[in-house]
Image (cartoon, rainbow, N blue to C red):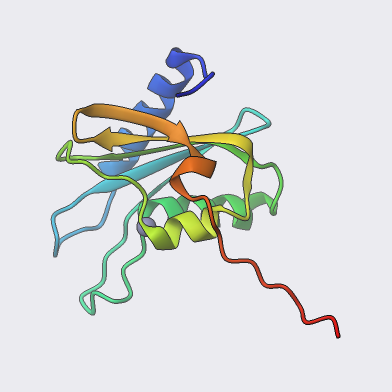
Length: 139
Ligand SMILES: [Zn+2]
């Protein structure tokens, strides 16, 4: 469910698909792209970057977010996230990316990704309802 203009989400998905073409995934051959739409209207993309050690691989979603913050700081906030892959396989964001993005999403943000039966678009709050938050002890 989304109140977003379908054309906006289509353009965001296309940007994610273009980013997937730049992925470095020689080991898994799973080429993923992400496109983040921010509340100022800007879009920042990222792709997955693998490493021969496997554990150092970084997802497209986090690479897009880190790129955005590196270029202009932690504002603006994300209002929509698109994830795509060259294979058209189901590919919702992984748990690590959901946790990282949770600190930078605006209220009402949505995530769109290839699901089992075509594109799915759901709210970020629904896909990740309980993020980890550090609460300092206050005795
Ligand atoms: Zn991830």
